Picture 1 (tube, rainbow, N blue to C red):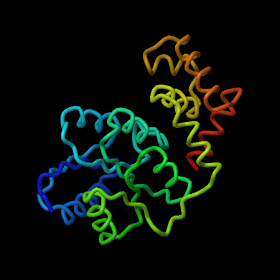
Picture 2 (picture 1 turned 90 degrees about the vertical axis):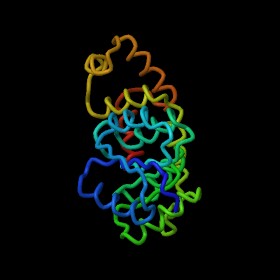
Picture 3 (picture 1 turned 180 degrees about the horizontal axis):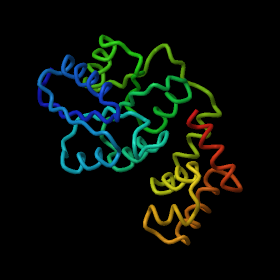
Picture 4 (picture 1 turned 180 degrees about the vertical axis):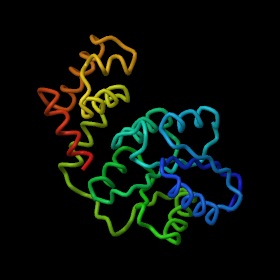
Length: 209
């Protein structure tokens, strides 16, 4: 395969990053491989590497909560193929990855042969989703559709809510006023069709199960 691919491995576990590194080298000899151990690092690399061909993204790493990393990536880089690599292999998670624009889903339980085959497929421009995971559940789709209407900033606020932060703490973290956070909350509740923060947090937890 072409050796000019630039691929970013975004995962905060060094051991798994190393396994992915080996799999990518087996699939694409001589690829330009970059590593990110947090969402901030990933965006920093992307700002420098404008010709990135593929991002391999772990859903759970610093700066990401559930689908937030994928949502922010697709919002900022709509044309960039993002393949999620996750230990969560439930059909609802795979469904959400597909719904939010993921180009593929590779379970962390995959062996090296499966990893290499999946990478070959996505680099040919064909999405990869495991055949043994049945995508469905109208309820998960409905929840995902509602969450997909949130802006990246609103999703960030919702994620911080689910972490138990108060309005003033969220305002401090995001360097905005409390009034701005309240405006975000109003918009979040309306889009998710809930009445309060408790219902919003429950809904997010259902989505991330």
